[in-house]
Length: 242
Ligand code: ZN
Image 1: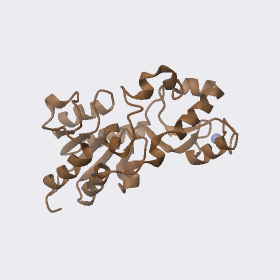
Image 2 (image 1 turned 120 degrees about the vertical axis):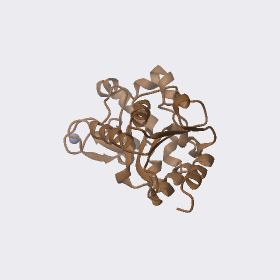
Image 3 (image 1 turned 30 degrees about the vertical axis):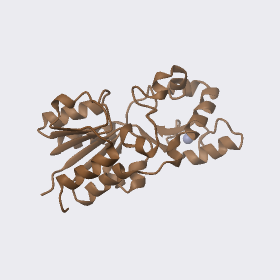
Image 4 (image 1 turned 120 degrees about the horizontal axis):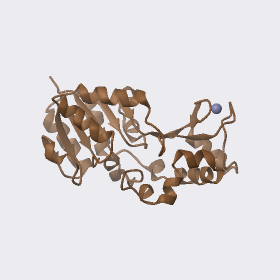
């Protein structure tokens, strides 16, 4: 029987798709306090100029023109072989879904940049639609239903994670045979805590990352290589012939 694998992904799985690590702990935006302000909820809600610049920054995100890579596709294959318990991602780029992973198995810890949401009534729309309005001269597009401020459906700095998503991620880490941590340095929570939870529950921890991570010492296996090369190999060797 195939092992039940929960996969946790971070920015590293998308760098081979041309998306640099913007939001990570050492990411471009995080290290630049002025840029971070654009994605901090209190500033965003308080200042229309911040909102204008935030929408423009969203539009310049390379994810709009990015395509899934072999790393994303390997996780689709993992699901096809019946071994994927859940795919927990810190990425907002939607590349797992675009690669073909099932929406019911993908848990977006930090939300996504493709959808927009109303800060007043929670109504969902699309970021593309909001950006069209920005391009047409409406620099601070408002909810068409209630008139409140719109934002992308991402978790901004200063916002809590969606408790339902977090609970599902914790459940998936508790209830798996293996946790694969892919493309994340495991320096921030809750990503790091999911490793602790999996280990405490008796699961094996397998790390696939280009560089060192905070959990290399306690992992059962560490694969330090290009993710888009290493992940397809890992899937085929662990689940031969699936
Ligand atoms: Zn609204």
